[in-house]
Amino acid sequence: MTFEQKISEKRQPCRPGNIQEQVYYDDEIDLADLLAVLYRRRIFIAVIISVFLILAVFYCFTATKKYEVTAQIRPGITGYDNNGKKLRDVTPEAITTWFSKKVYERYLSRDKKRGTPIPVIKASSKRSSDVILLTTYYPDPAKGTNFLQNVLECFIKELNKNLGGNIAITREMLLEHRRAIEVQIERIAIQRLDILAQIDQKQHELKVAETELQAIAVNKQQTQAVIKRIKAQLEKVIQNTNELMDLRKNLIKETTDKFSMLMYANIFQQNISYVTTLEQRLSQLKKEINKYEVDEAEKKMEIAQIQAEMRELGIKKDRELPIRQKSLEGKIKVLETKAAALSPLEILQSPYSSDQPARPRVKLIIALSIVIGLTLGVFGAFFREFLDKNRENIEEHPNY
Image 1 (cartoon, rainbow, N blue to C red):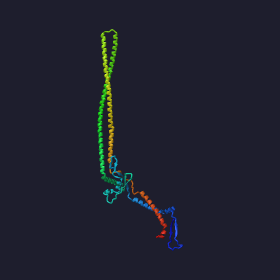
Image 2: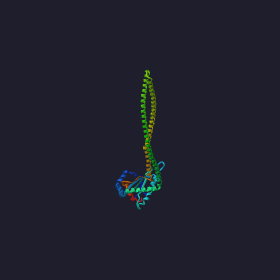
Image 3: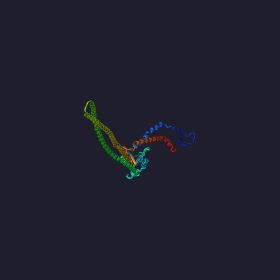
Image 4: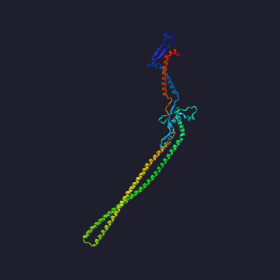
């Protein structure tokens, strides 16, 4: 509740009937009254909204349309430590500061005519990321792309002046490392030729060993044939001797001349001597067979050893050396990639223009115009309602 005094137009002396009248008003807000005010002033509110909406539409149609040109960059790689970790001498804060201070205007003002405005480039990055987003607006998308590209080239030139020495030293170190790897690849080629020569030598040794093994087999086969013949002869001589012994027994029982007995005894003695000779020859041949078998086993082991060495040389030539060479070639590619990545500034996304104009933002401007018009219209409606209700008091007491 508020207290309000109502003063009469004429000032009269204080009398019992002339006491100032005290009037009390209810100050609570009635939603129905507010809605009634808005309803009565609906045309006024609609006019205000329409005015702002017309101004917004007029601005959207008359304002110069600009396309959004963006690019993404981050600090480039200027070197590598002993563990191969990337080193970046430029910080995202330094790049952002370079664009926020509009240093690029010094380079572009030389080519621009006096009085020609240079678009503003906004650089922004997140705290947890080193990626920097560049944004500018340009009436022509193609020219805007070229403009931002020229700015990036100017920035890279300025960075190269300060960091070119570090990059050159790192590139020379990578080149020396590459030369050392190329020397290792050349050594692999020499090793391959050496292995080929060893394989040829082993093949020759294998042929010789196989030839010798065949000769041993032939000699062994011939010796076995001789043993077979000697055994056959020995069997015949033994059989003949046995027959002579039987015959001698018969001669002893019968009456025979001494000459015949002497002849049979001589033949019998010759057979015994011949059997002894054959047995000695057979024993000697068996020793030769044993020697051939030993030589054959040794020669087979030699051939197996040569074949195993040839397989090892083949594996080394066809597997190990190519794997080593591919590994070294992969290291060279890594070094080439590292050398190509050396730059004071890394462009993640080249300047790119939007397909549709980004400014003016028609929908946003129209929405804001409606909100502003509605807000001012409502305030204006209540203000006019206040003036209409208090116009009589204001006219009667202009200085109160």
